[in-house]
Length: 125
Image (cartoon, rainbow, N blue to C red; front, side, top):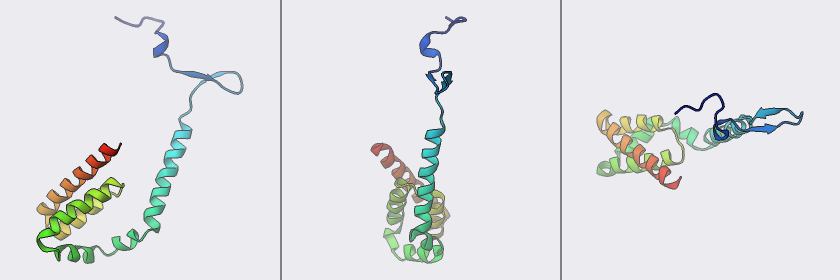
């Protein structure tokens, strides 16, 4: 069954009265500005935090992780899960896991940590 030339009111876009008296569609700009501000604040936090200094020391971090021995994969997975849940880029963490645990093992534990972090974020949301 088609809507015909005059679709029902619930299918028409919502229009509001503008200051000039003409009808116009709701603007998406306020939401876009808020989103851009949030992204800017998050980037500034990462840039200004001590995390920035740690990113320059990836080799040292890899050696510290390897020094944990048998617990290293579990520590990597939990760390990645926590950092991914708070919004840290996972690709940097995958590189660290690969350097510390080897390619295949690092890939496995990084993916499990990412999955855990995303699942935790899903549960909170």
